[in-house]
Image (cartoon, rainbow, N blue to C red):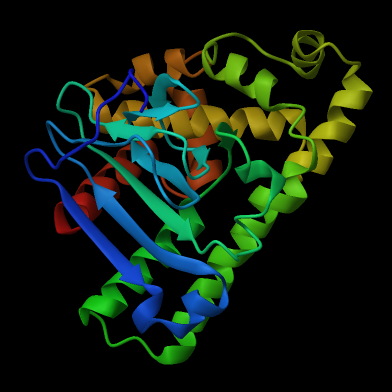
Length: 285
């Protein structure tokens, strides 16, 4: 038993969780997924398992909480995915009563995902999981009978989830050489980064950084940086009362106008509109 955490499952106030089992979804069973689910933890949420019997991954897609992985606690923010092998303690909790949203996928023992090298030891990865989160939510709602979704849509959801898992655990996970770099950058998003300074922090040449980044993220270093900044901005807008100029400063933009323009290019809507849509969605979830 891990002495740092204790086995518990405290849902807290206002927490809502939804799951879909492979017992009633053949597409999940065929993919080697035991079950998938998502939750919107509220104040006081704390769930911990000291000796889990299955491999799984969990990904945050809104708000911010904390996650226990590999023996340490760390912020659980949009863009973060944790790989949790069986028999390794894991936990998640809300912080200061702030809400967050995440989803999880548990694998069968004979699943090819469970055998992935990325799931042999606990680790943290970065990935855009918004589309996969939407697919998991759709599956869960379908299982509850809340939506009359055709079976072909159910299969499409599982296909989207497995495509994301393939990239996360196989294509992207070949080396993961830039994960240490992005973890450092996340804590310094207000810095005036460019490709040269990122390369210096990574200990490689700018040309080599571009090559590795293209292999691992299918994007340039600066596009990856923009993704991290925008996802952090979403977190700040959902769990704090910061004004837009402060959010802009915290994410490395000179003023709110530059930030707003960059955010609209990234998300398709202005920051204020995105926040309205987010609040509407979470109130209905």
